[in-house]
Length: 387
Ligand SMILES: *Cc1c(COP(=O)(O)O)cnc(C)c1O
Picture 1 (cartoon, rainbow, N blue to C red):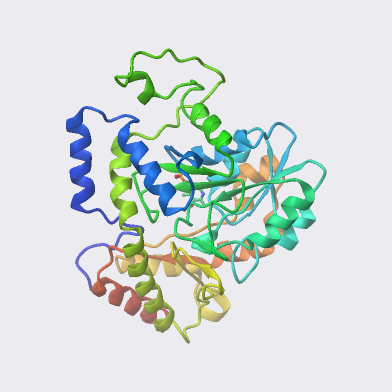
Picture 2 (cartoon, rainbow, N blue to C red):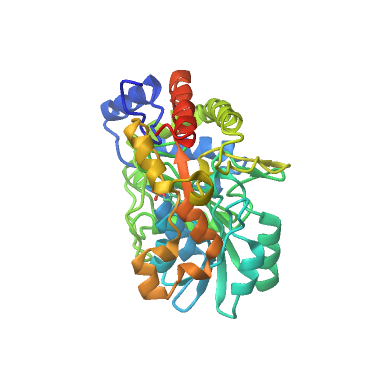
């Protein structure tokens, strides 16, 4: 037994970001300022895009929302996305005034299935929102092909996909927009935070305005010592800007992104090896010519093969003081979407089955070798009946 609870998605926090936050506070500038600008620059370098193609915001939900507005979505437009995602993907489509349409996933990759997307395209379809589930890249060639054929925008939900690559291209730079999350449990975290990458610099200019009340000059320009600048409100924007206190964390988190990825790769490989032969389905290995961000390690538990349900597995893990999570109960299982959009879980059978069988194990770079051993022992114990 271990002495303390293993938290799911524990952030890996080091002295560097603690010191940086203190410096930000001592500098007196804690709002949107030089640290946000620095974080944007380093993120652009990491993603191999120019500085003018990125904008930091205060969440991935905000990033998705402003990207969809920049994409020109309006009432009556349809946007196709996956049923196996976090509710924010779908909510941001609705907030942009459009109508979400779901296309079922592929059972092996758990990513949106391009053949299913094609079936859902109508004359009203305007965009596709692929989610790189768990950090595995979607089939972007097929998605781009469909987008070109039907003149659709592609907005990548990269909440799991900071390190993801697809055929030499970095996730978030393949579609028209890429939206990232720095929520506490994500691979790079700022507490709350997000980033947009856009194909066109003009879109980033608009997104920066939309993310700060619709004001035409950002706060840093307004209050810097280059003389007073008046701002003008040019559209009805939102309050989506990132603070320097958040960026202070992000800068150092991003500098460790590769080291943390390597640590998660070790843990992932240990899980893959240790769970071979157990009556569960392990994640498929990353496809050739792609890089998996290894954000989530998910197993599937089929009650008939395992002899117990997914939920009883989660309870058993909890009793062993191991935090787990579910990514995700499929979107049509939630009453809001069923009642307002008529989604029926039975129409998305692969997502429904996956959502009912999936369990995510801790995969934080913060896990010690002892904790990894303990998680492995516990999972093996549960599957061999020693619940
Ligand atoms: C976490 C997450 C989001 C939302 O990110 P926030 O930064 O919390 O707004 C969106 N989509 C997916 C797939 C996520 O996992």
